[in-house]
Length: 495
Ligand code: MSP
Image (cartoon, rainbow, N blue to C red):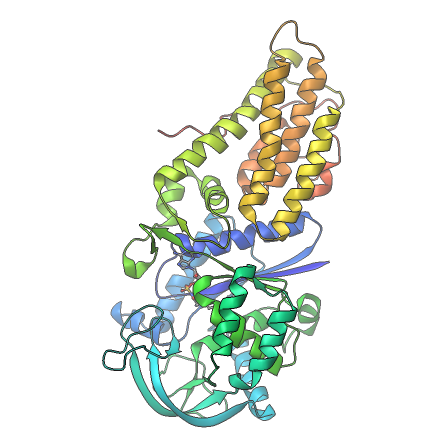
């Protein structure tokens, strides 16, 4: 079983902020979840390095575009390392191999008759790197980002996007690739309003892949960037890898880039006669005072500040738990602290701490050998089933809620059984059941907070005694005679 997952390629005009880390952390959680479910995972991410937006940003910094691209892609790599992102490949669109694939695809579509030469008269938004139709002609603004747009009038090469309208409507109707479901209508309405053919080349943009059939042009940056999902997995040069992983299973994107991914991208694939992605899931935006968090709005939350203050995993946990994936969510430090203190410090951290304390006091630090309470085993099975279902539906917050059902149950179970009392019965069974529960909760949390769970396994003393990389360990008992490890506080409460 294989699982191929992608993130968008991030522009190298600026450093990553919370919005960019959101898509990548989400992809990482899914990649880890599928690996632990026994899949062979290919996880692709990287940087989008061509186009006007980048060359202008470079100029503003007194750098060449390639220098800026080197600098920012390095920062992205470092950020992903810090956030424990387990990608298989980090692609840069300036890579030779990618450029060759883009040129080959251009040639293929041209030879097929899906690319033709014509005249472009219209507007271009550099910020969105998009051909747009402003609402007003006197003061033309981008309908999406409301910035000033550029007027363009030039001969260019076009992709016959409009020819794919009916086919697109049909697959959108019949298949399930647009997610969440409520986005489907938005896309079909847009197609029904009438698609224009897509301008694929730019005359005065030097920073781009040269057009293979006409040296006066470079290739439109979105056509270049979208093809990374093919070139990143070997298309046209590593057939084994490509055959193994294509079609892509899950593509995570933000809602602002849905039209590129839900219309242009499948049309290109149709033209290449390749199978379409199984799921393209658009998530919402992180906002502050209801405004999208973005560099240009000056309301950026840097992942670094956050991580330095609270640690990597609390950050990962918060962004995955706080808002339903697919909807917008308001960022606030108070919301973060609340989650951190209540979920990680109180519920999970305390459960672990008091259990280890009980093992120390009652069993000299050796996990008692007993059997698990049937009720807890049954609840674990049910929780794992629901959690898996939610993760497969890309519903992280609900998946985590499922895990919390077990955590809450274990805390209550301990309170009721009160094994710290002299008179309490079956202490060994009670404590064993809770440690088993913690092991299972930890396995399920491991895709979300991997570093923390490593520490938990060390504290319980099972880091080398169970297979931490596979959910099959949920069904396996903790072996006899395990000595617990060095105990430390998992998370420190924040005021
Ligand atoms: N380069 C294009 C994508 C090309 S993919 C073939 C691009 N890059 S981007 O750097 O501007 O954005 C990348 C992703 O970050 C988008 O999915 C976007 O939605 C996401 N986010 C940027 N700001 C965001 C928030 N404030 N909140 C959530 N995600 C947002 O678009």
